[in-house]
Amino acid sequence: MPEYWHLDAEIQPGKMRIPELSDSYTTETWENVDSDQLDNYDITICPRNRKNYLKLWFQQNEVSTKVAFDSAHKIVGYCTIRVVNLNRLCAAPFYAENPEVAARLLADVPRIIPNFEKYEKLFFWYPVANRNVESMLSKFFPKEAYRIQTEFRTQFTKEMIKSTDDVVYSVACGTHQFV
Image 1 (cartoon, rainbow, N blue to C red):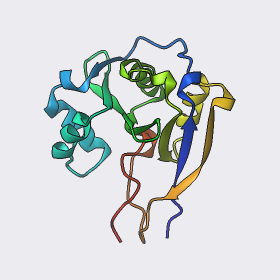
Image 2 (cartoon, rainbow, N blue to C red):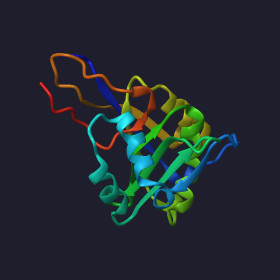
Image 3 (tube, one colour):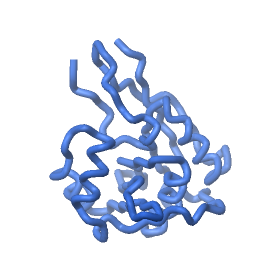
């Protein structure tokens, strides 16, 4: 069985400090984005057609989603942060084509979450292969404001299922169901 693990980053939202960021990317709330364009981007991340799920996912109570665009207005990522329970948040899903896009999304989504800084924790679950997550977090939070640990194994397969780990900053689901 392949060694394929996801890490868990537990973050203290109240200690977030937004660094100086590039203006190369902009964000919009998902409601203001063409749904076909968003679906077409999502299929590049997950080969399953999740068109019917995305809208339901984003419309849930206490869910905040922003979509990132480059200067040509091409989608280059999106981030959803949801209230889960016990005064905690979870980034799920969070995809970004590069670290600059991820930083823009991490800066912009909390701005639309009421009292973001008062939540106890924010969780990210991401593939161990994406080392950009820890680098991004270190720019937004002091070291004592987050911890990273091995969380769960996700590929229970005989052969590795191809995935685009470098764009996955937090997963929505932690399992691959194929054998």
